[in-house]
Image (cartoon, rainbow, N blue to C red; front, side):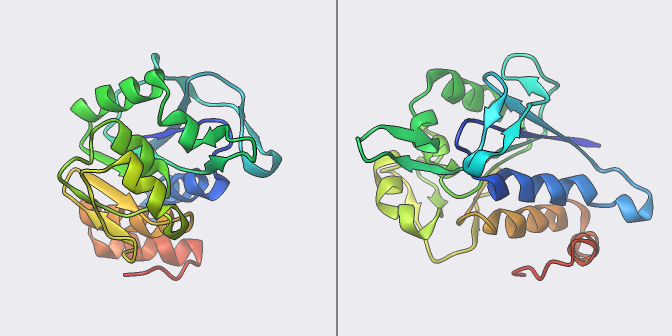
Length: 201
């Protein structure tokens, strides 16, 4: 069994984290297997996500089981007054950046959804790699990860250990791709069929 840890923070995009949570949470279950254990972590709780959803993280950043797969979601922007929120705030949060670097050292895979790639970029994890992000966040991504080749037209980009996805629903497709990569495409196909989700494969 692999552990999947999903980072949470205020103003997170709901589907950015809920999509991968669902994919890894149900993968293999219909055949009686449980290949993934999924949990969430945050610097503190509760978390106030987009559109008023309140979430209680399973663990805090400095107190959780070892993560085999790390998922860094996105969601956020800049308020009219110029104050960043969501991933644009967290990409400058030392506690989050240190956690990402620390967990990446021992993780098998590190995934980002949407502007979660900003956090990976600011942590220095995308230097010399290729990445994608939300199509409306390309300019911000260039600033967050200036040494990264951007591929905004791609649904996900696989660099081996680090995989990034485009915006919001693309995190579901990336997660299904990862299930197929680790467990075989039939398991990914069955997961998508159970979810009644037509994915980009």
